[in-house]
Image 1 (tube, rainbow, N blue to C red):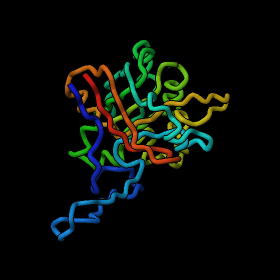
Image 2: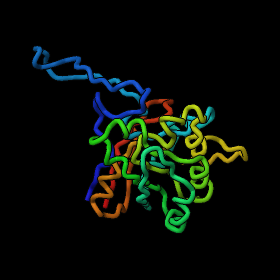
Image 3: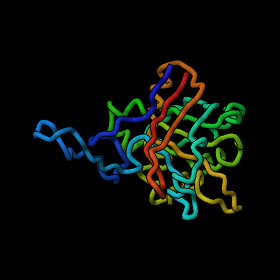
Image 4: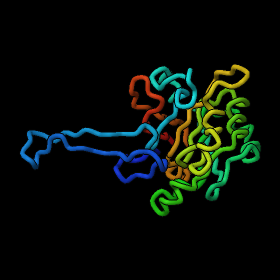
Amino acid sequence: MLIELSSLLQEDMARWPTNPAERLDADLLMERGDICNASSVYHHMHNGTHVDAPLHFSKNGKNICEIPIENFCFYSPLLLTIKKQADEKVTIDDLTQYESKIMQADILCIYSGFSDLKETDPETYIYRFPSFTKEAALYLRTVFPKLKAIAVDFLSVDSAKSGASEGFLAHKALIDTLEDGETRTLLIFEDVNLNRLAASGAEAKQIFALPIRWKNAEAAPVCVLAIC
């Protein structure tokens, strides 16, 4: 069974509050008498289901084109249901009880329940989604050597309310160069529709999250497919 976990890109889609909107322009239109239909798109890299490369918050970090394609292919995915209310944080305590399972995973998918609100309560989904503590992010990055990425069913690992004022600590904990010179980073997949996988009751055997790469960019839209 195949389950698509990425979002449909559209002009009125849920996005980080200050991000510009998506736009699809018809350059050629058959109903206007043109020979075919052809369009151009304006896309913000952090709208919709996307992946953050280290360059997003690390001056010397890799851009999206410098990451090997195999880093977007996962053969030991783990889906954890960690339900969160509006503005709550994912903490170390939420994760330690699953330590033995995370140790075997190459991508950790956290279903908070917020992807259920994307259509029914978009205001809460956009402005009050859960986020990570810096400590939880560092825990995932430093304790689990097999882990290559995390995926979340909300807009960002940092809060829309406090992320900017706090310095986007969770993002930096996952992808910036650490004080001890550690360069191993985790990819961050945000706004992933993990509710579809959770609702299926199936276990993902593999996940492929393939980026559409723009040269030197700090992020990319992704098509995320779970194979169950």
